[in-house]
Each structure stands twice: as structure tokens, then as C-alpha cells.
Image 1 (cartoon, rainbow, N blue to C red):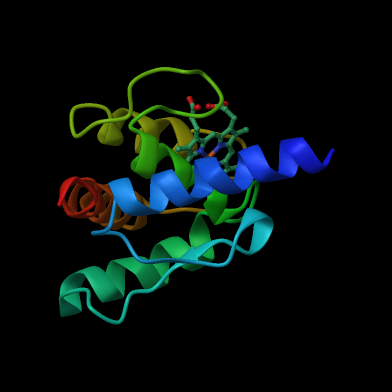
Image 2 (image 1 turned 135 degrees about the vertical axis):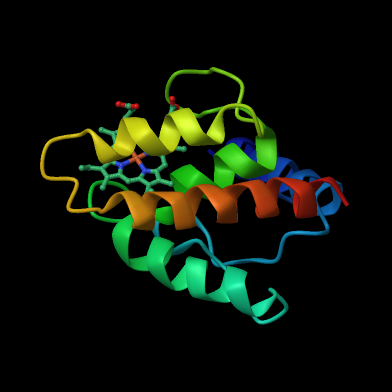
Length: 119
Ligand code: HEC
């Protein structure tokens, strides 16, 4: 168990240095982004994502996809070519409670975050 914990910490530390451009706060279900340095439009988009994209799962799922470039459930690539399709997939889920505009805001934000994560 201790060994597993150490491995997990190491993995987390490596991920954090590899993607210094993304400021992630907290971990697990409490994981979120520090949006204080986002441009105003992206800050507004984050306010939408923070509310709309946590109805069925936590922000961790989205953040991990952006950090790793791999969608955590399907194992499919998560890059700028894929964000729109994931957004639409979420919109179409039963009771997603999102408008097209809200999904677009989230997709724009994910594209911005992907380019930030590369820095
Ligand atoms: C109505 C429930 C619901 C809402 C709202 C929702 N999701 Fe999801 N999400 C799911 C489910 C269920 C999955 C499991 C995998 C799948 O079905 O694609 C998932 C999976 C994901 C994945 C991983 C996809 C994969 O293939 O591994 C990402 C990334 C994601 N969601 C991001 C988002 C974002 C961003 C939003 C807001 C725009 C959002 N989700 C809103 C239900 C939802």
C-alpha cells in the first residue's frame, strides 16, 4: 500500500512538472483549475464548465484528459481535433442539462487549456 502511494505521488509529481502551464488545485474529486491567470473570456467559460460539467462526474475526468492527452474512460486521444466531439457527446447524454452555447464555451476552454498544457 505504501509503495503504491509513493508511485502515485511520483506519477502526480511528474505530471505536474510536465504540464507546468496548467495550474491544478486539489486532487481526486476535489481537483479543479486555478483560473486566476486565464484571459477574461476563458475565465467566463471556466465558470460554465465548473457548474455544467460536474453533474455526472467530477472535474478530475476533464483535467486528466487535458493533462495526459488521453480520454481516461475510452483511452482515445484527447487533442484539439477531439474536444468538439467529446463536448457533443456530453451534450447528447440524457439529462445533460446543457445548451449548445454552454458546450461551445467548454470546448473553447478545453482547446485553450490544451495549448496551455503544452507550455
Ligand atoms: C449527463 C451527464 C454528463 C455531463 C453533464 C457531462 N458528462 Fe462527461 N461523461 C459522462 C459519462 C457517462 C462519461 C463516460 C464515458 C462516456 O460515456 O463517454 C463521461 C466521460 C467524459 C470524459 C472522458 C471521455 C472518454 O472517452 O474517456 C470527458 C473528458 C468528459 N466526460 C468531459 C466532460 C465535459 C467537458 C463536460 C461538460 C461540457 C461533461 N463531461 C459533462 C457524463 C456526463
